[in-house]
Length: 462
Image 1: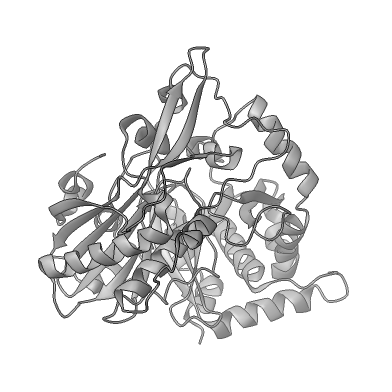
Image 2 (image 1 turned 135 degrees about the vertical axis):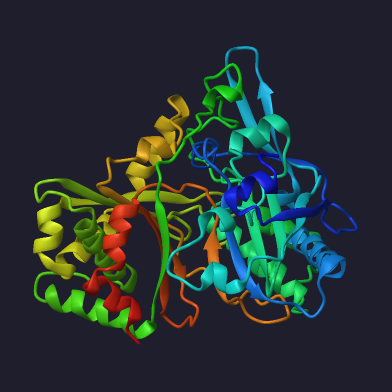
């Protein structure tokens, strides 16, 4: 299942695997096995790494086997609601030069790994804006495994690793991206922590399970299942070796975010026809600072791509939809414009990119995809160091994930999708409007970013 922990820890050599187990849904009358056919949104992500996000928690009253057995029990109960995440991707080679991929909901189980890293303290992970990547990445299971690998080798689509640290615990979760997006990921995490702390999460009947699993949403013209034009699924796989990057984690207080939003809207007063959001203002602040740090020439084209959720935005996709439901929105300008026209102008470009969402164009894209599938490769998203891309959302409930012995101290992510210009946004630890950004750029640019007073003033503010 990818590299083992000793390898994943790299030079740090700190993380040791104690045990692995499969956790099946704790269910009496199991739903009959079913197949969930995957949409273009799901299938295009079969070529990328698992989503990897995890929480740094205080030390629990009891550790070792007792801790892991308790977490296994609560995970089994959470999987009653998210039964499909205990399934496996299956490949059918059709003999006509095509394959199709489906999620088989047969309850084989999610993986739970128990590991130790007694030489690593909470402060080693979260005590600096600089992230010790070699240590943090080793706190996640299924490193380097792509969605297609899981289909070919029948690996779990969901795997969690509980690592006991010197003075805390890290719970890292890896979810196959072709099975769900960040919404699905945090729904599962929230339910697991709620059940573990005794908050219930009980399911009254099987109708609630089926309501949560949801059949995938297809356009009327889409074939189901969608044939992929390969004789073997392995042909979709391309490995990507990212360049050397520095990863840092910045938190902005609610007061700081509010100030950035007010500034952006004040600058655009009389020009903007809609309100610039808190997130758009914060990302514009980052875009400008990273453009300075990269020392790009004024005439250089730069872009910012962010994910726009389709739940509740597209008819037929319910708020609780369990598949992938995201489209990219891209804002562009020259470096000279981004730096010279101010925070408000830059935030307005992001605002307009989100507002340009076109349901008709999205449906056309989905239909054309079924005829000519195109897969996401992080290598092709590289831009020569001129672009930024942001995933996740500050509205996901990260710091409400109290497993019963104290709220999270920090959130961190694994190696998935890390490239020059990747910025992941999270709810901030104080919640209530605070936000955090996990930023990856080249080491020399990062050194300048951390020394950038205008950028860091907003980080330190409040």
